[in-house]
Image (cartoon, rainbow, N blue to C red; front, side, top):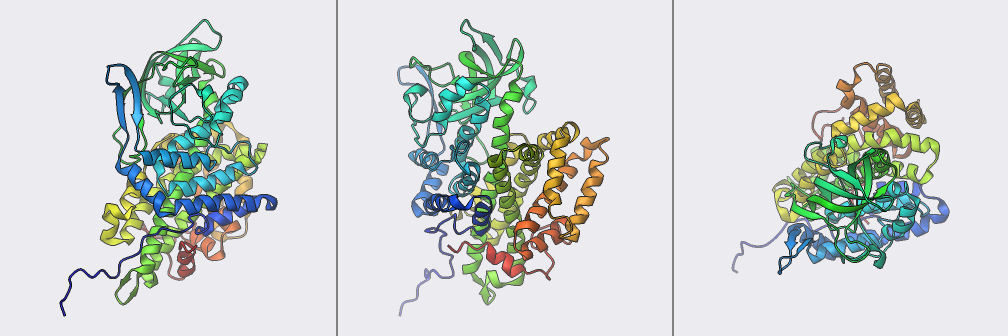
Length: 544
């Protein structure tokens, strides 16, 4: 009998053909926790349908195609006319259309709208994270536009529509529209008050002509953009439509597309304004105050996107080790691997639990919850997004050499993982934002302390961390130099309080022992062996 050298054994089957939503116990429990019983069946059905689509082989293939075929810039047509268009692979449009139709831009006026959208965003990020950028920008534009009721009445129905229309034509002729944003300039970066783009008033009230250069414009193929520019009264927010009402193209000169580390399917551009027509949003000089609602919403999406990336990385690691055999048994059953998986699962669960809690605060909309968000969003954005990269790298290592190969999907997660920490204000910006709230908005600190104080006395390690945090708050002199330390502790205390309140006892115990009690090493897989690591790791298995 002839021998063969190509018999394939001991290979892990692909993680496809499953419901990404119902397979995530942490996410489903969070949705049930934050959704009223009368609405829960509707929300479950909606998210499960999205989860089945996200876990299908077809959509996973679309995600790979969109990533492997990045967008291209066409500045001119064949005749030499300036057109400034971005061309995408068909898979990109299919994914973006699916995200729009699933309601990922429609949260503001639906019951439990933010919770169901947040859960959907976590699920959808696991298909292909790039198309989540325009979904996020479109969703987040709504609170900024509400500074001008007339503009909101005109544009909000388009932005919250379930219809994706990719054609560049006047927005009033479209059943749905997507939005981008342009704040960053070369000389200023995150210091948007250093922007030099000029806005000159036109004869029609509220209209202006813009001249300037945006260093980073998100989603440049969109129907409209919120941008900041210097008007006579100071830094102001403007709406720049891509196509004017008469059908002519607005002056929107795309200079180049950014060549990014990850997020390859999504276009980010440098754009020149040269007599570009714009409509003022809010008052002159109130640009930051007007656009801050959009920034806060996109920062929450950075948390949710990182939670989605972490969940996918951990799910792949657990799935692989549950099938792969080595040293006489399944990798999942080896004590050392189980420690690594449980440690990764803790990080993922804490991120998802926190993200959904923030979404629920948006749905509540009360004064106390909005004050809570003022501190919790930048703190969560700072910490959760920073934890994404080490989780993705460690999860890839769980697959060994297979995790370093593109076909596994883990390298794409690794490249994507730093993005949410950089976008919408990098770590120092978030830390400084927390300091401003601590110093100027006492109601925000009070709301934060009320939230974490709900479980005071339930765990001695959490109590100790709260005490240490209060000592940090008591000394605000020279706090800028230790701002990262303070914000990290705030995020960890908040995650710990939520897990003690809502997670299984073994999860809360492990989190408090390691992240708050100090019984932890400097790398994943260093949890105390006395913990119930099997239950923690098993909880992360994508079984549905």
